[in-house]
Every structure is written in C-alpha cells, then in structure tokens.
Length: 141
Image (cartoon, rainbow, N blue to C red; front, side, top):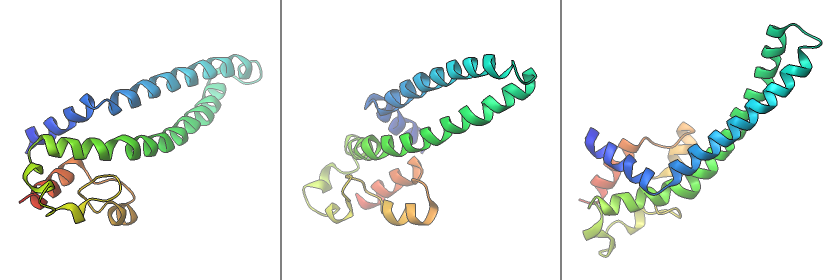
C-alpha cells in the first residue's frame, strides 16, 4: 500500500503541478524575505531588534500563509484532480471500466473518483492520497 501511494505521488511530480507549486512558493518566500529585510531596517530605527523582528514576522508571515492558502486551493483544483485521474488510469485501476461506463457516474466535473464536495463540506480538506487510491481501486472492481 505504501508503495502504491509513493508511486501515485511520484506521478503527481511527473505531472508537474508539485514542481510549479514549489517554485512559486520559493519565489514568493524570497520576496517575503526581501520585504522583511527592508522592514527590519526601517523598524529597527524606532524599536529594538527583537521587537522589530517580531512585528515583521507577524505581518509578513501572516500574509504569506494567507496567500499560500488561496494559492494551494487554486493549484489543487487546477492540477490535482486531473493528475489523480490520469494516475489512476496509468496504474491500471480504471482501464477496463472507463469504456464500460461502470464508474462514469462516480466522476465529477474535475474527473475525480471521490465524492469531493461532500468530503470537503464535512472535513474542510481534500481526502488523503491513500483514500483516493482506495476509492479508485474499489470502484474499479
């Protein structure tokens, strides 16, 4: 099971959305660090170093977390569902069933195999890769 999950997640990296996400995180975090340096220089004139650093952390890291939250929602909606469906098909769980229509009613607008809307409404997050893979395997039987 662990190997299946690892193989599936490597498929995500190959499908490139994790690389895009990491690249944008690094760029944005570098920008935040630059702003923090400028802010520290200005604030340290009026406050001692520790107070200035605390203020900068509170403002900039808070902004970073908020921005990344919305960005990750965008990334997961744009890439993850499609990557999941492609990975399930490549892993052989669906090949014999896609044409038969046996699982078509399980696919939502993003091409997923899981009842995402109800899951997200209940748990406020996406199901784990393991749950998605098990769902695909069960529905492909």
